[in-house]
Length: 372
Image 1 (cartoon, rainbow, N blue to C red):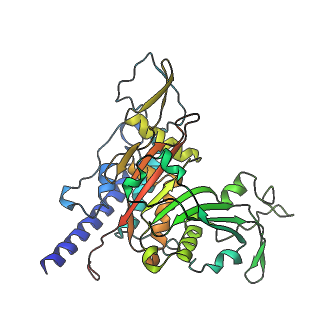
Image 2 (cartoon, rainbow, N blue to C red):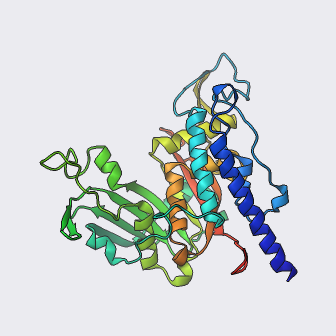
Image 3 (cartoon, helix red, strand yellow):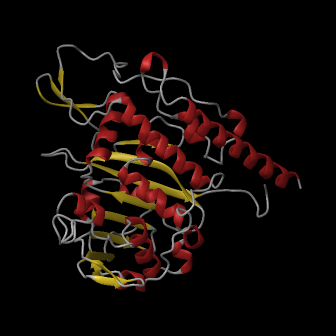
């Protein structure tokens, strides 16, 4: 009984704190002197770390504005301005990540229409125009030579991965009356190791991205009358990955996805978040005398956990929030899981800078059934 009361009290405390933080977000969109309020760091992340004692949690306090000069930069060193976010953008991504953490913790629900996904049948992929190329012998052991120590996270051999390449190249018809959905040329290429609970998200370009960047099958994306063409409804990375994962795993394996690698990230928004965190931590790489870049180091790089500054911004980034939605919208099959930590490193130490991420996933404790 005492344990049940403790679980109930813990969940109530987390729920109240999550509500307070979201209220805080709404009220404090701008801070003093016209600056955007500080990124939600320690308090926001801790609010959904259900393993912590709620009594140790507190609301966020104002932090640095966009100058981010706390490391006392040497005026004689020239730093590139590449990929450094202003605090308004950084805070917006932090707020997205904070909200997703509330959804992952189970103390807040997504808005109507964004709860459990409607896509649960593997056959939905082909019926909506997705074509598959599959290999069950994908060998990515070369990654271990770049990511020295990857075996320290209890991942077995990276041989025999299940590589699933989905390409949206078939026009389909749906609805009454029938509506035509042209191919978007979207592609999702991911590699799975079901026994180890590992996913490599490699080359992923959504239908929306292809349409926006004039890479779809129709350019511009309009019909003869100038109206926007309909976009395939099954189009999110999180849904395509879930249907793939569910198809190749046992029920036990489905609920044991442990690591998601986002290697060689190309999304500029995510890269800019990583670079901004590097700057806030004073991490730089100098390629000429007094010519430096703010960037994360090679593996093992750096890790931010729930409660650390930068965690919610990364979770709210394009490469982070897809993983969060995967867990939020497919709880019935994947179990109640959350993102414990995010590791960042430079995957190409020779040549171009190319940051990567590894997201560690763990079960989320929400208390015994029926607890309020």
